[in-house]
Image (cartoon, rainbow, N blue to C red; front, side, top):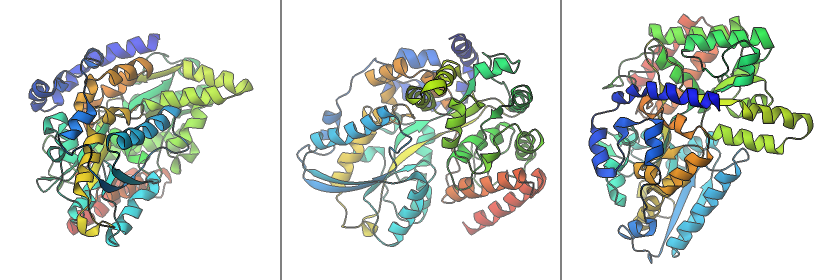
Length: 490
C-alpha cells in the first residue's frame, strides 16, 4: 500500500491542474452538489454517498411508467473479456428497465466494438438504423454531420445540462445543437508493476514523472530484466490506440488539430508540429532503438497486453481502473505456478497520474453517449416516448454509474454523490486515481471525421514510424498531408 499512499500525495500536489477546468464548473456545483473545480481524490471520496435518487420517480416526470411502446437499441457491451461485475450490472440494467417500464418492448443488439461503427454506417444508409445507439464519444459527430441523428439532448429527458461535464456536452454538439446525452465519461491512469521496477533498480513506489522517463524506464527494465518495459498499443483501426498514444502526443505539445487548446477551431493541423514529432521519436526509441516494448505492439490492443502483464512480463501500461479488477479475476482463475506469479502481479500493481510532457499532462476525455437516429432512417419507425423513457433511465445518476461500474465514471455528475459511488471507491482500488485525471482530459476533435483521424490517420502515422517505412519527421508530415485533405473535404 505504500505506493498507493505516495501516489495519492502526488495527486493532491498536482490538484492545481483542476484550475484548467472551465470556471463554469464552480457554478455547476451549486446546482448539482458536485463541485468539479476542486477535483481531487479526497474530494471525490468525501462526495460519495451523500445523496439518494429515485430513478423511477425521475423517469416518470418524463414518460409515464405505464407507457406502452417499442424500442430498438444498439450498443457495445459485455464480451468474453468482461468481468463478472460488468456482466451482472448489464443484466441488472435491462431487468430494472423492464420492471420500471413493463409495457415497453426492448429489442437490443450487443455489437462488437470494432465492428459496430461500420454496421451503423451501413444500417443508416439502408434506412435500418436503431432508434437509439450508445456510441463511443468519438463517433457521434459523424452521424450528426450526415443528418442521421435527431437533435436530442439532456433537457429532452428531464435533465439539466449542468448535470454533465462541459467536455461531454461538447462531444454531443454539432453546429450549436445537441445530438446526444452523455452516458459515461472516463479518464485512464498509468499502471506499473512495482516488483519489476524494483528488479530493474527503479523506485517501486514512484511512477515515471514524464514521458521521457517512460522511455528511459522502459529501456532500463528491458536491459536489467529482459521484460518489456511499456505495453505499447499501435494497432490500426482500433480505438485502444489513440486512447494510449494521444496523451503522449498532447504531452509533448502536439495534437491532431488544435483540440488541446482552450478554444479549438479544429482547423489548425498539429500532426506535423515539433511536439508531435517528438512524441513519435519517443515511440520509435522504445520500439525500434531500445526494443523495450512488445514486438506485437503493431497488432496489439490493450487486451493483448493483459496476458503478459499478469504473467509479469510487462511493467507499465495505460488503462482503466477496471484493469485491476481484470487482473484479480485472471489471478483467481490461474493455477499452479502461474497463480503464484499472477497473485504477485496483483499485489504489486500501482496506479498514478499519466506522465507529463514538456507541454502538459494529458489524457483522453473519453466515454460514451446515447444518440437518437432520425425517424426517416429507423427501421420500423420511431417511438419517441419509448426513446425518452429509455435514455432518461440510462443517463440518470443511478445507471450512468452502475453501467460504468469498473470501466468508467458516470456521465451524470450526480452519480458521484450516490451510495454506489461509495461502494465503487470501497471495492475498486485506485478508482479515485483514474477519476482524478478528469481535469486533464482532452476530448477528441468534434468532427465527423474524428473516427478516421484517430483510428486510421494517427495509428498509420505511428505504424509508419515503428516499421521504419518513414522517419518520425516524414511520418508526421505525411499524416498532416492526409489530415489536411480530409479537413478540406469537410
